[in-house]
Amino acid sequence: MFSNTDIFHNFHPYFYLQKSPQLLLFSQQITLNTPRDILELVFALGRNQPLKKEKPKWKSDYPMTDGQLRSKRDEFWDTAPAFEGRKEIWDALKAAAHAFESNDHELAQAIIDGANITLPHGALTECYDELGNRYQLPVYCLAPPINMIEEKSDIETLDIPEPPPNSGYECQLRLRLSTGKDLKLVVRSTDTVFHMKRRLHAAEGVEPGSQRWFFSGRPLTDKMKFEELKIPKDYVVQVIVSQPVQNPTPVEN
Image (cartoon, rainbow, N blue to C red):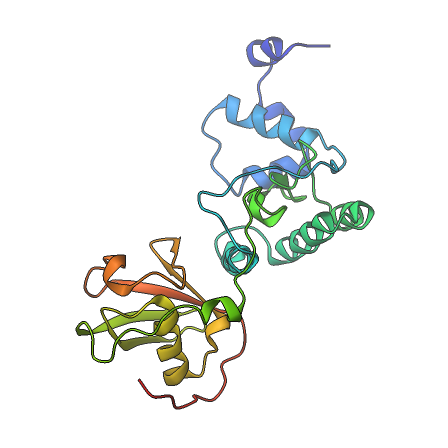
């Protein structure tokens, strides 16, 4: 057996590419700058381990609800295939991740094997297809965080007091819905996020319970007031909609 040092000093790395049609094909699709790049690719694709049963343990930067976790996952699965890799592999990884989180390891392994996906470390966080394309799944797609919190019910949100009529000042808030629509919502500086959700419901028919508001990657909770958010003018608040939009329901301001 040769050590890694022997390989680096005594053999030309392109020898391995010539011996492997799979690696040769992949080497024509990416840039391999040094012999070390080639050898790292050879070693990565050369080992394949079965999917380990242990779920990753991780802590979110902020306490996360189930709805926020679902929204974060939906955003990843909607955007990841657009940047790199093959769609059919992404679809297989999504199905495998769902089976893995549901503790159906046999199904997850069968999906991985059926799609010819290689797991160098026995985890879905780093894997390769048969052409050598690399895929990385974030831990939040494989397990919930250890600091998950319960979703607040509609009954709890009813405890939020109504702001006094005509209190504060009127302003426009730019929103971008996950449905692809951009709009400007007229709100008051004393409005809470929950009351702004009600205004959006009146304008667009989106139920308050189906809305998840984010600004600069930070979730906005129902009790936060607009004047406390310090959102600069013309900055956009992201609204993740988890249910189909219904017909707007007129409500009084």
